[in-house]
Amino acid sequence: MSEPVGYRRDSQDEHPPALYEGYKSTVLRSPKRLPIKINHTLTEITGPLFGHGKLQPGEDDLSIENGEEAQGQRIFVSGRVLDEDGRPVPRTLIEIWQCNAAGRYRHPIDQHPAPLDPNFVGQGRVVTSDEGEYKFTTIKPGAYPWGNHYNAWRPAHIHFSLFGPAFVTRVITQMYFPDDPLFLFDPIFNSIPDESARQRLVSKFDLDSTKPDFALSFKFNFIVRGRDATPFEE
Amino acid sequence: MSEFGITASQTVGPFLKIGLAQGDQEYVVAENVKGALRIDGHVYDGQGQPVPDAMIEIWQANIYGKYDHPDDPTDAELVKSFYGFGRSCTDKNGNFFFVTVKPGRVVGLGNTLQAPHLAVNVFARGMLKQQVTRLYFSDEIQANSEDPVLNSIDDAGVRDTLVASKVNDENGMPCYKFNIHLQGEMETAFFDV
Image 1: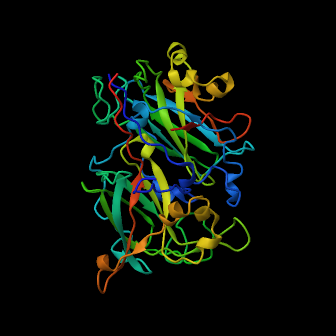
Image 2 (image 1 turned 90 degrees about the vertical axis):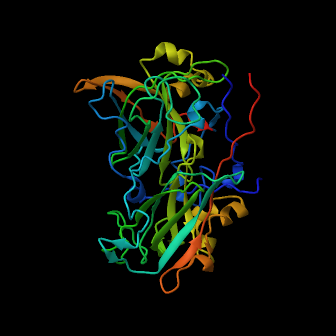
Image 3 (image 1 turned 90 degrees about the horizontal axis):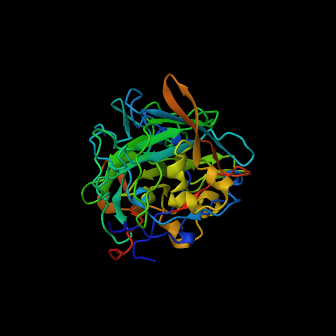
């Protein structure tokens, strides 16, 4: 059998390091030993594929709960999932979660004194189309304070979880909104060493995909790891 | 850098369960499936404190060593309704669990055969990117001794962090213990994949 074709290695400065002291919780949760490099076997080049038809209607719309409209600025978030060679990643699962328009998560440990919204849960799922496209309808999340340092605030963001075609393409990230004044002060955003990699987590306002008298729209593309060149047969 | 720059990782944060704790994803198979086993473990930080906001994901081959994926070119059989993916969010004690079957042996690089193993992704608040590890089984002594990934680790103590220990059966189901130490003396072996 020929050897499996692996996936390209990420460059070191396009992802955050395990230890980033500005984000205090990394101090005790980052391994001290260097990770052990392994070449990709069938285990690494395969991975969970979805598309077993498990999604329910409405999982792509966070702005309505039990038929009632959530509070806040209604938005679309849409884009494509591609690999590093620009090839679409079809039928891949995207999961999102976020706080409400006031900056409050519906979660027992969130004690920020901002209102909960009975019509907003903040969780959604979609599967990409054959062309790698996805689209959510949601509410623009608010900024919120957190305990990392004095007067720390997270810039507004939506959490995104993606699988891609293989175990090694799995990524969980956060999508931000343009021109947020909190970027400068946020250690999670600034943990990414490479400036352009950081900016790629910022969505773009897109007038063309807004819906008049209904919703604004932000575009965000995901790029997952591409395949190595095909190796020679043994 | 390629024209299409990679999307960087960010932490799952403390509220991960809102988005990720869907259904019974701990059950890769139902408990009554032949060969079902249970994996139990805790996630600990560098001071040995439990991590209550972590998520563990596993990916594995079926009992014949076949992945349910088009890039597995082997002739081994698929098993109906077996996909090989599991997910468990830790509870307030840092505990996670899975119910699954032991995978068969999967071919490795250079005509080798890997020991039965699960690929493991570890996410948590305080982790800006997941850590990748593997889970092997303590009762696979012969297969483990032949496994190229295990054998690439010289330090036996580090190697042993990848091996889940067989413990007493529970209700007739084989059980394995697998703790994950993010940092410290018992730090788990993590991989750069």
